[in-house]
Length: 219
Image 1 (cartoon, one colour):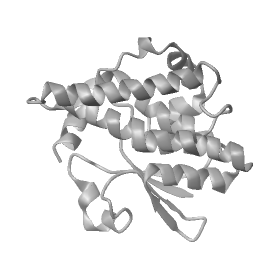
Image 2: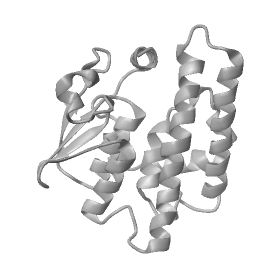
Image 3: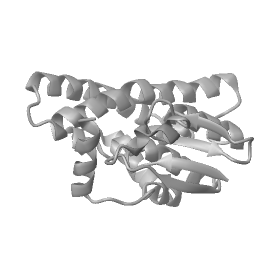
Image 4: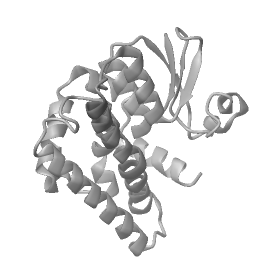
């Protein structure tokens, strides 16, 4: 059994989607970000960075892992799925995974904050993050125009990007500008594991998402 410490954010939903896709048994430990539970001492012992997600794998000596990219790698290696063992194919997946962890996530996250949540946002700052997010989407679109999934076959790289790209409009990004990305989204939208994973810990409304996002942005 795996304990998943999570909330209704893109990074949290990367892991619930992966757990569903890999058909692993897990229990949800919802972390109330609005109440700053992620900064409490007991949780900092699990994730010293004070963010979600984190997991404890009770079937493997209670190993504890934080950071969504590291968790995805762990789950893929634990099951032998969604990450090839061949060196070339493995690093093809990893480079697209790290593009999300180091690029799409941080840039779109900042675009979300400045575009959606900050009442006094500087227009130049908003544009800077939106432009960089659009540039990254262009890279993804080119890759997906040539491949069904980012690294050829479905992998943890797709899972990492999916919850963020589902919220492109929250950053002011028009997904209609990226036909191949849009088709890729539709393919993943049809997978039961993705549908179920995206509803963890709960399927929240746009108004609740706005409230949650603004709470996170100002902390």
